[in-house]
Image (cartoon, rainbow, N blue to C red; front, side, top):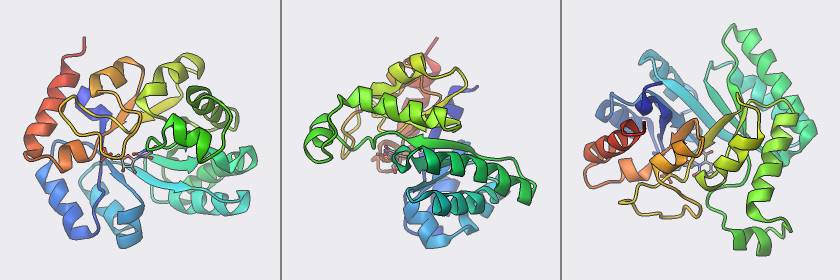
Length: 239
Ligand SMILES: O=C(O)c1cc(=O)[nH]c(=O)n1[C@@H]1O[C@H](COP(=O)(O)O)[C@@H](O)[C@H]1O
């Protein structure tokens, strides 16, 4: 895979107009993420636009609900023919299994390829301190992220979203074709902002990430094209 194809850029913008402006600004980006803000604003229209431009789509709706409800949501989302879809591992095994099954049913009904269903292990904005003191989880952070990934794998999911700081451990323990997607990636020259567990693009790929989600270091940079180019050069230099 061309290293640039490992970078997923989130369309974290409020409306269709701003999303199209980003697509026009970065024709070289092959994989885009549609998250809660844009999908809530535009609905599936943005997915049609991405498809008309032959882009890969990560529909990041982070479902979190009871088994019957997440199954229904996954069935509906899978009819759009997207490539990746998210659900929180903390829904529990019954909901994850129901979601994995629903993804196949929805895609079959629409005659499209099923998306890879991937589980959020622990949001990259949560620190070890917050895990212990706010969420009252008694496990060490890397152990918790690994447990969530294993729960997803055992429930029949295709992969997980984790911070780059945990990806080496997940890569070592999960099966080889388990897709690992890392947000919270920050080049040395970028501000970390609300991301608490970051590594650089090169470090994240070397640790075993299949895809990197990189947003504001590119889209909010003073010179966004230069930021993309620097990331692209960093990844191309990996031997
Ligand atoms: O599912 C995600 O993509 C996600 C999971 C997570 O744990 N952390 C996380 O930051 N994300 C998403 O990854 C993107 C990161 O954007 P930047 O922080 O701007 O690079 C955002 O769209 C987040 O919604």
